[in-house]
Image (cartoon, rainbow, N blue to C red; front, top):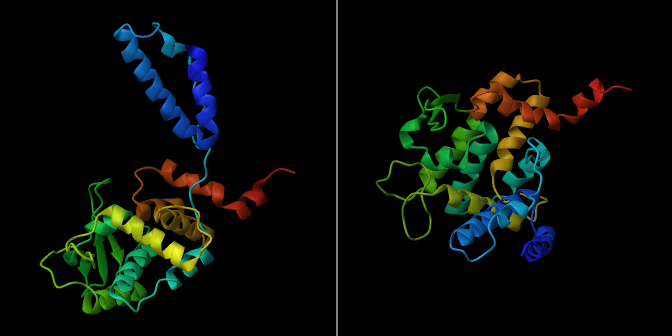
Amino acid sequence: GADEIHGFIRVVSPRVSRTTLQHMVAQVRSLLRFLAGRGLVTPELDTQIDTARVYRGERLPRSLPWETVRAFLQAISRSTPMGRRDYAMFLLIATYGLRTCEVAALRLDDIRWRTSELHVPRPKTRSPLVLPLTDEVGAALAEYLREARPALPHREVFLRVRAPAGTLRPTAVTEAFQRWVRRGDLPIAYQGPHCLRHALAVHLLRKGTNLKTIGDLLGHRGAESTCVYLRLHVEDLREVALA
């Protein structure tokens, strides 16, 4: 009955976030509707279960202090092929705010050495983003391509270092991020490199970059997606607060 289901939710809720709990309650409701249709439980039992309240914009973006971003990059050992590859990948994310899928999909033809440009395919906006190729990023890419990239016929920039040989999946970028966080013993609680993207947005905001430029760099379709980073601009928020 409803009492048993509420007891289950009370046991589970301390171990998960409210967002996860909301999904779990939805799954339980679906199961109860299915069982009711088979005549195995009381009809409309699913309507007696309350769900967790989750409010839009209640969570802050997963950002890091810029000093921690630099410390993370410095913690990546470039003495091995994997280290050279990973350093180039995460420097791209920290410099341009790329997504893991964009890093994995980057092709050799997207690096325009003669014009010092980087053409990033953006599936979300369906139009490539043209970025200036900085000296630091260019040097890291050149070092990886010359000394660490496997000699394979693939056109993707970043390839697997260990067997099986081939291209990288976005999940492999996330796993590499977690590996270097553990090795560097860094104070980073987040499980993926998306926090580097958020950290770049806040870093640019604090340097006075306008929201439109930041939104274009991150590939946001509207200003609303970029405005969430304003909540992390603590010093300016203190200046506009009422007494």
